[in-house]
Image 1 (cartoon, rainbow, N blue to C red):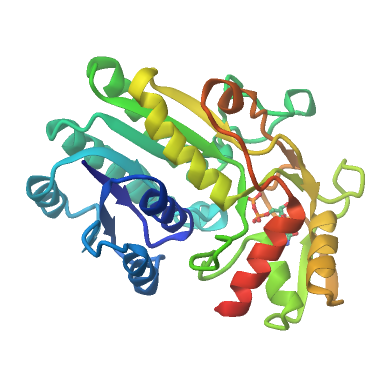
Image 2 (tube, rainbow, N blue to C red):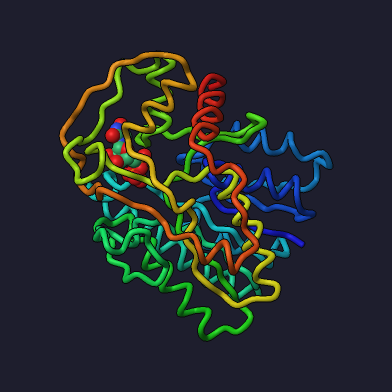
Length: 335
Ligand code: UDP
């Protein structure tokens, strides 16, 4: 059985491929254009394949429709986990077409080819950004909350969600799981793969780079929010728990119908709490600067994860900010 993983050279995709190698028998076809992912990550994943025959890598862009179709002709792909996408909110506000082209149009094309070649399971990486600004009475956020994205990144993912659902509604044998990620952080406990964005914009890697002296200071974007310490609160999920949700989603579709799930721990930490935790695990004092609020940052984003815990057989194992920061620190020391 072959599974296609798009975007496997990236942060979350690489952790999922590692778990697919360790926990399943799948042969894995990877499509990645290496625009934000790394060739070295593909090499690492190949090195983890003890059989040396389970990974087939295509350096290809999803917009090359005819080339993508050839990959389906050459292989027997019946399942897909689709990560390949752009994911920076600020960039999406400056260049919306880039986001709709890749995240929505290329996803539409992939689904079109997938259904033509008889794909049965489609796992889609979506985001909490589809919810937009959420009022305090709707925290923690349930999947049933009305979606109302406030940036092209969130909209581009939400359009894809709709397309997936519409296609599934007319194709009985095409099933999907949409996973809406909250704040993904941390790194593989073996230290083989980890987070590497260029430019890096996420809080935890930036604080860790500061602790390691790779940056002069960490800027806190706003300390005047309506939260206990004035800084934004986020639900940080360890990337290995998130990767595990994808493996469980594949199994879930064997006996269950298509569905949408939040991926988070249902608990939030403030920016200041994250900074303090990084100080603790690194044992380093570093410079903190309070800046004005970053545009588009909601005060609090916390998932209600009841649905994924009760309906899917997903049990978080690394629900611990200290472990998240430690694994991220160990990874950052290596790169
Ligand atoms: N943040 C910050 N300084 C930084 C990067 C992020 O204060 O250098 C804050 C950001 O304003 C947000 C939280 O950290 O409140 C998480 O931001 P991140 O970009 O990691 O994820 P997001 O929640 O935007 O997806």
